[in-house]
Image 1 (tube, helix red, strand yellow):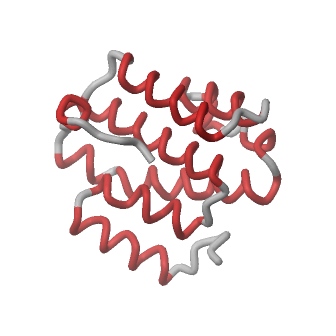
Image 2 (spheres, one colour):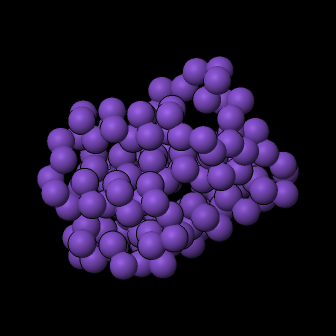
Length: 141
């Protein structure tokens, strides 16, 4: 779990139009997490969403090398804190980091969803949870 401070929270500020795309990104990340659980970490390293995002490439590489959860969490926090991204790009990096941490922790897809949904805002989070639960999200337990 990423621990927030005011500076990091300010860096996530983005438009409502950007936030409207988050449920689709979260869906992709949940599919990625499901595949990682079912087929292993190495199976997702070539996925398009991973290949396009440096933090995912780096994170999955560390996971495939067996990085301990505590060290992995510290490394991701340093990447977020020292990075130069802001706005929607930073918000996406935070989602990627939360997904990586959830996979590393062995979380179920339900727990991963509950960690990612709040990034959409309260109303959209509730809606997203309801929709995905009704769709019987793959990998749910």
